[in-house]
Length: 619
Image (tube, rainbow, N blue to C red; front, side):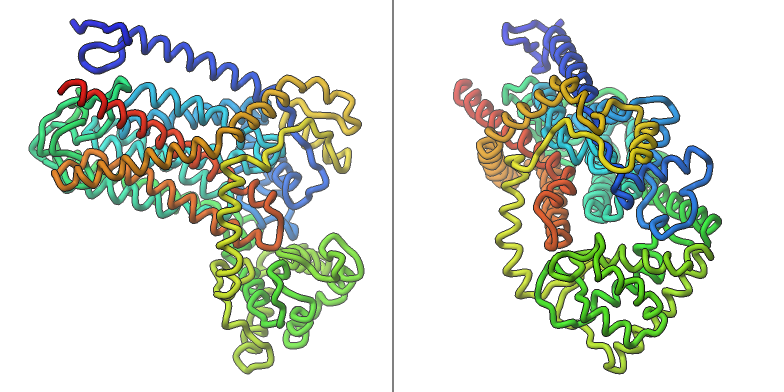
């Protein structure tokens, strides 16, 4: 029987049963506190946002009535259905939105920590990660959790998807029972599908998913098929002391750890690479993609049956998206990043497309004064995206169904394309376009914009300088407010603000939580960077000694970091016409990734220092 040291460790290097019970008890306590605080923060009902908050609620209402997305209108196929389905399910079950959101987030954080434990099997690090993510200020942010919109839900699902991919990789890496791989694969299938259909820009995390499953496949096929020993996984010591545990050598290659030192002992339930095992794992690797394709087909089929358009949304899968791409490619001589299509450019399109010109009277009226036109007389950003569909709807086309609408846009696209080809319509050939749904940028604009904005955005994310939690009164049409309240079933501040003081505890806690994280943000990031640098140096030295134990953790950290950088780049590109506040709202998933990397970096530094100190002491 293992002896227990005063430090709470057994002589096997594992935390003692008492230490585990204490951590579990503390975990339960902080979880209960987090749920209490989350439920104590009011939702923010914005009934006037017809294409955002209220649209999500209108989708949910229609789903609950069995009417899919409701009557076919200009905005019906503008956004994916995932978040509204989530709203509808919680409403049907009678779960208050703020409570359900908080519990779901806690579950996602827990699963992320469980998955990461497979690569960094240190219970104390896992607990630190759990608490730090649990109270991340971004999940107290007004835009993330108070608005009835998808930002907070997207952040939770992002964490869940990353956890599932790490889980699949970790079970293969450690040669755990195939049932565990199956369970993580099922979670990956569900989370990838939900993630993809929560927001239209889900492609940013695709490289992480594909590479994660691909590397797991490499490990599966390059490992030792004859041995049931697990691959090497560096932990710095399961007790947090920095003391690694020995294991049999010669277990794997660069993606799978191995060759001695600092790895785990093989756990029970690991199996050899039998043919059935390999086939099952391969199915697990493919299942997320198959599930996503099946869900995509099901949504397309349903939209076609209800609206006559075989599309997930009209942003990418219809002729409407081609028309918008055409309009954004018009060379109108404008240099401002905030104007995607000037009025002059639109007039040129009217001149060459008689079909598009049918909307001119309505759009001209909008230029005389409407929500879409600013004080400079232009539509900024994606204003034309919404104005055009509003004009087409006003002409009565949407009443005739999706097939008629798509045919209309097809004709416009053909006219604009012909005008580009024969030179009647000047086309922008100098700009780089990363999406059909937005303005391009020239190389000069990119070099001027991103070197300044990217580090500024990173600093904002680290310092939470745009994070806000408040007891904001409901806004908009009273009928819309009531319909939103009926769906979310959560406490909210009345239009007159008379009950705002009821939420002082939750809001005050969130404000101080943000303040603490903000004050520590830069320092924690610097320490984490030092930790990763030290970790990388030791990893390089280890590679020369054929020790690959640290490689899996490096790959996952690098994958998350690069994914975050890619999403920051994409969001800054889109938000070049708008404010940093909007970019911050969209970048909630990136904040959670940064938080996870901060904890990892600090933990790596501590465990490496403790390992070196213990080795020196042993000498």
